[in-house]
Length: 198
Image (cartoon, rainbow, N blue to C red; front, top):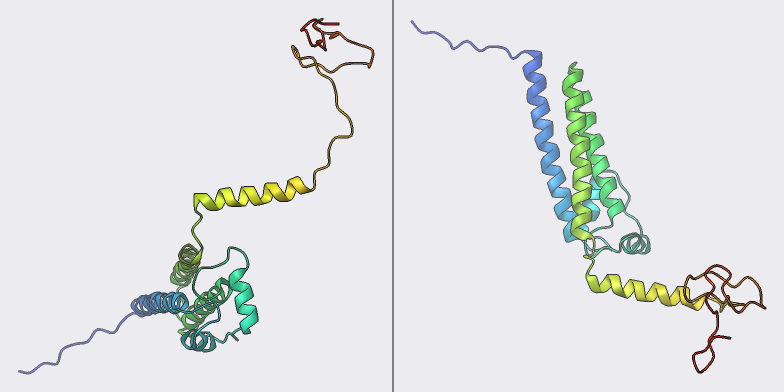
C-alpha cells in the first residue's frame, strides 16, 4: 500500500520564529554591506554609496555638505560621512521592523526581541564605524595641541599691574609698604647686597 507523507502544518509560532530569523539574517547581511560600502566611499561619496542611500530613501547631501560633515567633529580619515552612515543604518532598522509588522504575526515578545537586536546592532555598527574612520591620536599630536593652545592663551595674557612682596620663609604677603619684617614669622623681607637684613 502506498502512503503519502503527512505534512505537518507549521504553527503560527513556528512561522513567526522562521520569519524573525529570516529578518535578523537579512538585517545582519544588509548592515555588513552598508558598512563595507561606507568604508570604501570617500567623504564625497561614491556611486555605490549614493545608490545605497537612494535605495533607503535618503537624499545624498551636496559635495560641500559631505566634506564639511566628514571634516567636522573628529575629522574622518576615510569613508562616507558618519551622519549619512547613521541615517542609512536607521533606515535599515525601520525597514526591518516595518517588514515584521507587515507579516501580521501577533507575537509581541518576538517583535520586542527583534527590535532590541536591531537597535543594539545599529548602535554597535555606528560605534564600530567611528573606530574605523576616526584618526588615531598619537602622543606627538597631544603635545602639538598643548603647545598650540598654550601659545593662543599666552597671547591673551596681560602682565600684572602690581606685585606683592612675600616672605621667603613663610610666604605671607607684606601687610603695608613700611614693613621690612614679616609680621607672622619675624624674618626680614629684604636683604641688602652684603646679606644683612635692614
